[in-house]
Length: 150
Image (cartoon, rainbow, N blue to C red; front, side, top):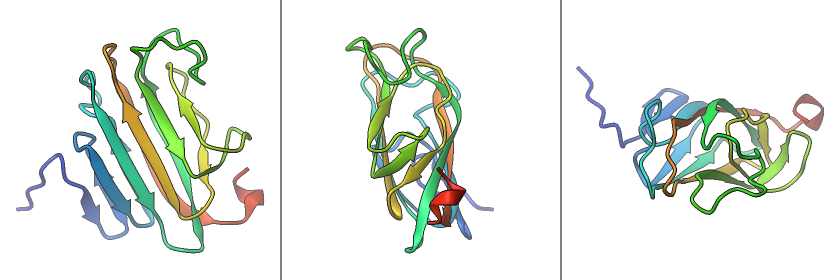
């Protein structure tokens, strides 16, 4: 019988899983899943979690949010978001919804797929005083051919 602690990454061949309760997790492989702390239950206040995702060289990362519920009524780009709102920061981004560059997301609108600039992507979740369900997401290594992903 295999036992896994929810704070540790779980690897099954080329597929990685991780719970969101660790403060920083490295995910390496061809594909995987990760989620905010306590998902699908409410995330705790004042929590910061970071996922460093690395896929094989010569590949890029396609990140897809499957569920996304941070703070009701806020813009997805965090414009005008309250200081006590939860948010997700994503860096090393080539494109997200046709827009280039690193960005942050808030609200409850399911974000479009995100594509990395190289074989590394960093996702950071930060909560403050407002809590909600959070998110879960998947990633996969894909070819660099921009016609396939933008």
